[in-house]
Length: 166
Image (cartoon, rainbow, N blue to C red):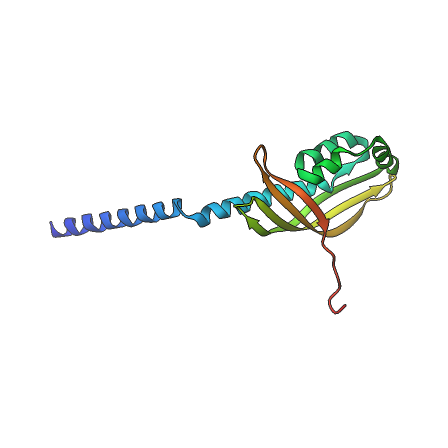
């Protein structure tokens, strides 16, 4: 009988400990922050890849993809591309495709809905039907949280690179 009571007390203690641990984990602000950071990274990777991918043969679709990935001034800049600009892109016969090799959320402010992500990107470029050439770039992207569509890209640029010792 004593062993059964001890076993019952031990089982109840373990159940209470697991219940308290589960409750603490479920209500942990750090867990929600981690989820937001992961979402920002996922959206940024996709947007960076989209913004570095364009095929002159599917220009309208590519520009629509750019527009869908962006907001703010960057979105406005894409939206106001003139037919002359589009024709220049077609005439160059350029095809680019990008692959994000790695990325990291450098800044995340949940309250203001702003984030900055850095990424290492491989961009394959073919111009005028020539052989594809791989280029590697470091990219910095800024994102803002929009009410209608969640996180979107509102700025993108290359991160300058200097050889060590220069």
